[in-house]
Length: 568
Ligand code: NA7
Image 1 (tube, rainbow, N blue to C red):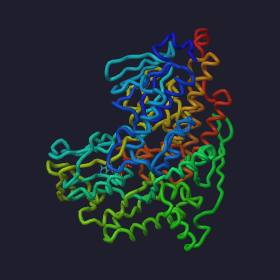
Image 2 (image 1 turned 45 degrees about the vertical axis):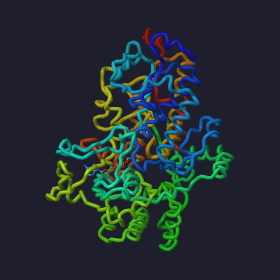
Image 3 (image 1 turned 60 degrees about the vertical axis):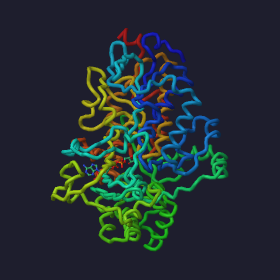
Image 4 (image 1 turned 90 degrees about the vertical axis):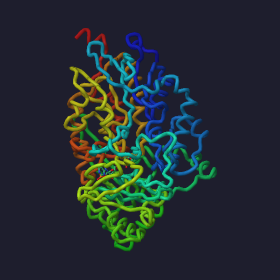
């Protein structure tokens, strides 16, 4: 594009983060629009989530033929994944291949974290500073920091006295950890721990799992993909990819629930449309047969592609699926007390991120060297030099401690930087009562700033890569439009942002999702305001709405040029 904006700033765009979203953003802006772009990445390599999360068992829960970039036919023909749910190292190899193919590294500054970014209202530019002392000006600032990159290590007293080694899943050593013959403690039973526990149990002398809240895990069934299967995906690729744009969560299966969005950005109307049948429309035998079939097929589909249309909106229906999984746990786990402890009862199934297990999570608790400790009734009081002590004084000893305790999701990485918009307001100040945004993409008071898969967009309620591509393409389309029309400043209107926040809350409240103390709602971080952060209206409805806004000359945004502002 080579726009006039380049003359007044060091680069046209700064992108924060070189995970999947930052990589594609760079390609789209630099190689398609011809803009000058600098990407800052705190890691020494690219890949984001797949660079940091190298823990044993780390793998993807979305199917690889749709958890891979779709923007290049050539790329899609060149790369084949070995399994439906590939492991971390294979995904990272893929991302490095993409970076080589599109020559991305030359515009990425590695080992450099963005410390702050301040908006200069008179020039309508951002000044971005880094932890290595760099300062660069840019017209546009794009966050590609990912939803799960600010790790949560609970503030346990005594952690500094622990004499063994400890690790958090989200910054795992590159040369791995040898658990052979070691006594290991792991805190957490979320999606991450459910991948780690079966992967390391056999190596350890003893593995103690400290569980606060049990989770519903469904076996992944992770078939190897033969060249023949991969060829079939490629034959039908256009239709498969198109389908991922039409479903609630960007998979090829769907939830039979659609939202129609109408009206103006300031006055949004929506109507839910539900097809199919309720879990309560059929008798118990038929329901059970269906759940058995879904369980055997495995994966996230159990919830987000159920044959029943109301698991996420009707508690009575949801109870039938939840009880089916609890019965499975009771069948698999031999010791009845352990089985009961592993049965979730405090939240409906699907209201926390559904974990998926490849190596037999529940089966692992039948091993003699694995024990389960309830830290809800009897919380961890402190870490000791040799392990940890519970509130009732019970001591547990181990050599290695693993924190699978999650992340300050969706907002933590953003508010952790000193991002200041008009009037010097920080993003942390703007979001003190919870994140507010227009479409999860843009923010009143923060002109020329975009957040890829930000709070308020479907993001973590969908196959992330499809949502990333949608946001990257929308942002690139927007920057292209601004250049074409001579605009160099864009900001949502307060009315449009308010209406979006109101709408997102209304939609969330029409589902069961607020019923769990989930990281989706910020409930895992003490003091964080509660509210469903991802948009629950479905990615298909969201995509249509974003497209309509773009086609309507960016409705709900104020667009101006330097000349207009000078005259005013
Ligand atoms: P999650 O899903 O946030 O799980 C974290 C786990 O750690 C969960 O079981 C928590 O229990 C537990 N936890 C957190 N703090 C504590 C303390 N202080 N004491 C005991 N237990 C604690 O993170 P994951 O890394 O598993 O998954 C994050 C996402 O990554 C995942 O959903 C995928 O999208 C990929 P709680 O449930 O809060 O009681």
